[in-house]
Length: 360
Image (cartoon, one colour):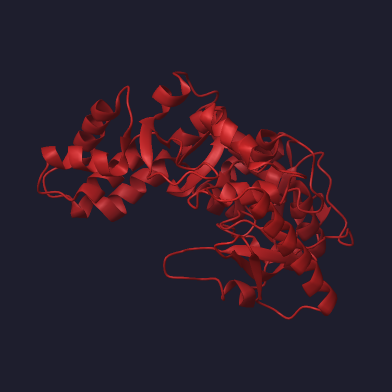
């Protein structure tokens, strides 16, 4: 056991690794890599995630990364749409396949009438080979072969069983187009994953701990959408690559060897988090940054997650923007007058960002 980590240290270490204690002057792709991609089912979420972490972030930089095919938007971990470095996505996508196949079995197979999942996969691959189709077009072409099946179900199966990229203009700062799919190798170029199998899973554990550690086993597994990772974590610990800590209430935490734990008294300025930001979303370890009574106010039947406001490193508010780009703060917990002003200052910064980069 390497020592103890208090709740305050756990919180500050997460914020430091996520560049939420102070914004950095670095390239967007470097910050995106440290965050192990950013959730992007809301196409603008990744832009807000980088705005909160990068000093002077310009959305055109991320637009260029997408159009140059250096980063991709596609279903990855937990079958959730991520924005991720293309070369990382190449080896992460196979790791996500088991969860996607689980989605097919639990949600889609029972809705099929004539088609089977392997048949849909093969036909969709043929339809998309060398070209692009919108989700609607893909559904229409699939239902032409299986007219008794719902086009939405056929498309959902193809999305889960094939590595499909949502190509621009969908996902750009001012991109309003419908989801348009291309096969990953057609869009990025053919290639082989850099790592596979358990070595790839170990790399994913390393990346997660670098960006989100220290973490419980459940924290790693929940974020990754995987199970049975404990043997790999313990093997990495036995190889002196990971340290084990005692966390709050005796919880067992793991972290990369040689990375600092941040002091609990490190100042944490007010910050606005992106919708679906992974410091809160899909986090079994979310108590390090949000109280249960605050989180309960955010739970919705459709799983939506708004932008959130941090004060002293903890979620105390949500934010929204109107059609003019003006950002409004809605408290979720009691805050002092000075903390409310700090959140308002961040809201004004984001309002100015909207007006400097108006929606098209």
